[in-house]
Length: 261
Ligand SMILES: [Zn+2]
Image 1 (tube, rainbow, N blue to C red):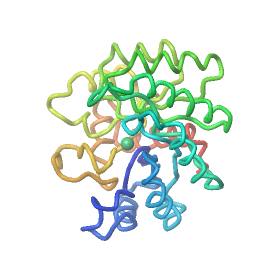
Image 2 (cartoon, protein in one colour; image 1 turned 180 degrees about the vertical axis):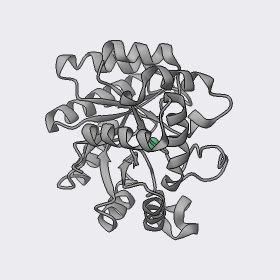
Image 3 (cartoon, rainbow, N blue to C red; image 1 turned 135 degrees about the horizontal axis):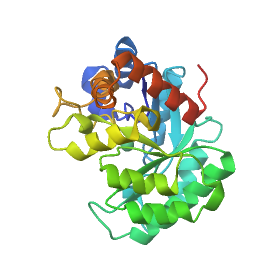
């Protein structure tokens, strides 16, 4: 299995259990072979890169500035983040996008920062991990502006339904969908329907740790070692075995991130 989205580098969350390295090692012991660490802020660059340098084979890094951190000074911060990842061989740009859930104040700055980072991804020939919350149409407006050479897109933490999945695929037929613990939540029937309709070839696994721990661990701090609960639910929804779901989602993730076997 590949965890395509995990923040095991968050210091405070993992310190009580031996830190990020110990969390990576627990995941490896549970059959997770590789983990992608998406950056969020200027401050998160150092702990993220420290963890990657300590576990270089088990982790890949994504360079990006999270939409919730965008304010009027976004341009300098985005530049600083990308400077910090110079020479680190990121496997993607992310997580980037638009989030209007908590605070829509900087909506237009979020769109500009997203477009700027899509440009950087295109220039570097990197795929993009998208964070889009309460902002699907704005997100698709920005990606549409990229035209024909829009980078490959992964819609991380996809928790919407079949209609939204279709809407995304209509514009980006090759898009991938990152499915996390929400797919196991009682109150999320629409995302289960979406996964069944998308099928295994459009889906990749993610924990989004430390958030969104899957049932039966819901409410706990999440970590990549819990990924098999998500894989098992996706297998059930797609009518295949957990072994098959593991193989197929792993292949999808390897192709997207250009990660060799
Ligand atoms: Zn994230």
